[in-house]
Image (cartoon, rainbow, N blue to C red):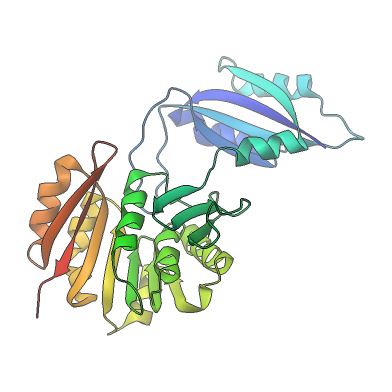
Length: 300
């Protein structure tokens, strides 16, 4: 089988229409890519930010016995998007698979501590190796804020501890905590896809039995009066500050915490809010401006 890719470059406002158009013409998948090398900040849970200019790619399966009429397809698209840059190409099965998979490599977080794409062999078989499907949801370890949280977990005693992962995304932090010896992880996210991804990645790593994940209402109902020993939240500064009083009720006296998704200019504001409930012990920076704030809950 071959795969036809049709790439169309559009403004942000045209993305939804272009996706719908390509899907209506039989695309088996539609992907979005940056057209101008524009950086994006880490999104809020459940949020999908877009670049100003986006390459929308429709992928079509061509069976061996039935050719796609590329000219007719492009002609119809032109009736709807007459001026937007467009190009098409065919890729073989194996080439398409490698193009996607080659974008990922194992990531070393610390000594004997790795994130490994599920189709690859771990560089160190006897290390703590987190198997991950990078396509499921936000959180692969490549982003500085995720890396900082993983690094912190590797430096924190989580053995036999209860851990909360708030804004879990792909579930990578909760899975890491369990592989590092945590007794139980309670995870939550406002995105149902993140809940599904967390379950799948926990199952992939053999730790699903010790993990609960659900939407916030389910999380609150399940957790009830249970208090965590370790708390990690990798979201953004605004939600972190808004949720600080709630987070303070979820953890034990002197429990350890880490916050990420914060840039340098926001550290003072976030720390000021959290200092009412927590002792701020360390601020760590990666990739110039992404920061992790960590410390302990006040004694009570």
